[in-house]
Amino acid sequence: MTYNDTFIRACKKLETDRVPVWYMRQAGRYDPDYRKIKEKYSLLEICRQPELAAEVTLMPVRKLGVDAAILYSDIMNPVASLGVDFDIVKNVGPVIENPLRCEADIDRLKPIDVEGDLGHILETISILDKELDVPLITFAGAPFTIASYLIEGRPSKSYHRTKELMYSQPRVWEKLMDKLGDMVITYLRAHVRSGGKAFQLFDSWVGSLAPRDFEQYVLPTISRIFSELSDLDVPKIYFPGVSSGELLPGLKSLRADVIGLDWRVSLSEGRRRTGGGFAVQGNLDPYLLTAPMEVLKQRAKDIIDEGIQEPGFIFNLGHGLFPEASLDTLRELTEYVHEYSEQVLKAASSEQSRS
Ligand code: CP3
Image (cartoon, rainbow, N blue to C red; front, side, top):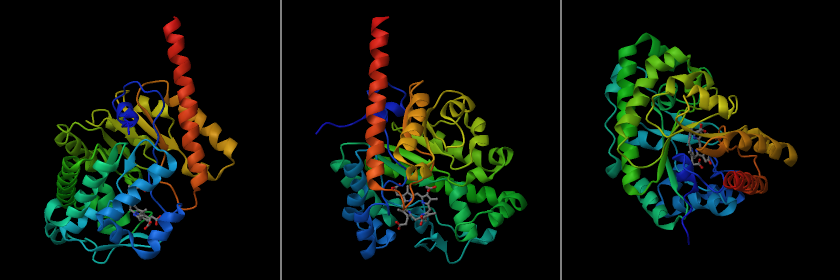
């Protein structure tokens, strides 16, 4: 079994034979075998069984032929170790019975104890480290996105209470960002120690902020996370979530390797706004997976043609897969990205050797 390091090479902006591809939320309900497992166990129950969680992580790798695995878990899992009770409710998402509402609630958050409380996640990573022939991406939710669940108590469209705390009690907000920043740093460091080969920080909802507020209230913690983890020799990805195009100029000096882009900003514009130093990952609108195959392939081709202009491109969606996507469509798309990009790269390298 040869190890496929195309994804890692692309993160480091090294040459590759083809464009690597993986999908955010690639383990999920679009897969009938996953749905069968979900009839028996909840998401959190799967996560507590390392063999099963490893198997669910492996399923899309085998079925789709993607170039990276992403750990089956959820961004909420580490908050259990801070002493926050939550559930993942079907068709809703994370729900917290006692949302954080005041300084005392934030003071009560305990420091994370990864080995003590989340050993099952580290064990899943160790199992996968032995079984995979592609890199394992582990992940954490970024402080703003996690805070939005902790404060709202459930998924929100307005982030009303989150912003209320942020604007009206900046010192308390800072305390929360510090605690969640510490959580992320300790958690991701443990992942890498257990065999994680790259990590992604998901800031799914931070695009709801104006750039100056992002830079004032959130970015210092994001910068601290990547700086404190900069000694780890694994690619580091920041995904600023949906509608984050206007935040990109603020990321120029972040010590990450890759920036994930949503579909509202083109890859070249994303590169330009972030200063040209990062590899980019993205950015197909996930709902194109419901379009006719020729429309989907045309859009994928446009993205590849643009991404391939510079070293450091990973094909992905601009946000997570949704349950209505089809396994066959994803398989065909993955094959198309591989075949088409290989063709283009081969033609470019023979052109180069001739001139
Ligand atoms: O990508 C993967 O395949 C790995 C697993 C993964 C899950 N959640 C499992 C999951 C990852 C990377 C996540 C990250 C996550 N979780 C994010 C960031 C990514 C994003 O989509 O922006 C967020 C915001 C969450 C919080 C969360 N968890 C929500 C909003 C929901 C509900 C979504 C829904 O469609 O019901 C969840 C539940 C969840 N986490 C599911 C999965 C596979 C779906 C429900 C299930 O299968 O049990």
